[in-house]
Image (cartoon, rainbow over all chains, first blue to last red; front, side, top):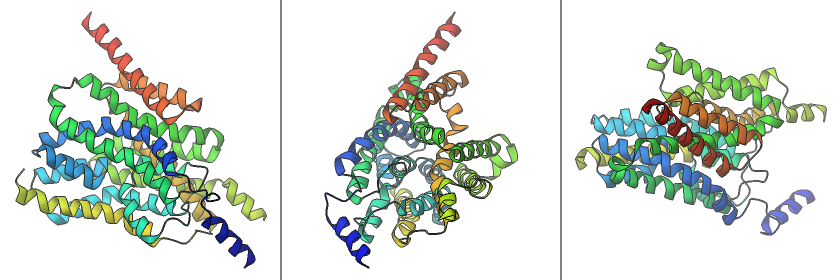
Length: 255
Length: 108
């Protein structure tokens, strides 16, 4: 009991709280924002090609902040699809965010109230999650808010630029920018995998399964890319949990 | 696009995307104590990012050699534990350089 009180005191003191600051979040979000600027540029081009106006493209980006889901959503809009179809496609493609939300909820500190969770969840993307999850410290609401600001600006701004300027921007430049976002993913996974054999093995398995969904024609036709990612990630993580004793698990088993 | 088509679809899309994120993040509050479940959620970030990157990165530029150049530089820089921004920019520059080389080769 005394220990719990002590912990509460520690968390109540902002200087002792370890959830990270707004500025730290802002700084960590810069790379993501720059990456998004380029990826959303391509989305802006695609949205306009699908029949959306520039402000409609921008609004879709502002209200969704997700790449795969938006590409599918704009496709449904272009074909005047049904509301249920839209709902189901967004749930399936974005289901990985639910997984990430649960994973991230294990790392949040006490500054994350229910209201803040509901509001901040808006900015939970693959990259923001990847950065937040790889932090040594807990994730506080100020840090997380800071982390989402520049990516949201980059995502919306890039979409608007792509929608307006898409036609006059040379292809080779947008293509090169598109690699940046994947470079970012790699820079999150590799340094961790280098020091943790289980993460390395699971990452490779996940890539392998993802390839199956990409290169086996039947699977590619019948499984959406969002769903393929979920299956690959879950199966690879399960293999890691059941085939290799994780460091922490081994420690706890000893204790 | 016609507003009577766009507005309802845009609202449903935004609400669904938000709820998929907000519901688990808001409702799932307790710390996971089961070691296996915890290990699973610790691995998920890395397996998700891996599955999203590969093989998609190979087709990000529309040309396999330039994409491979970007991938290779990103792998090397991140094995040297360079920052997120360094790796992202390095990968872009490598792709751009490879595109230049490819243009030079094909123009000859």
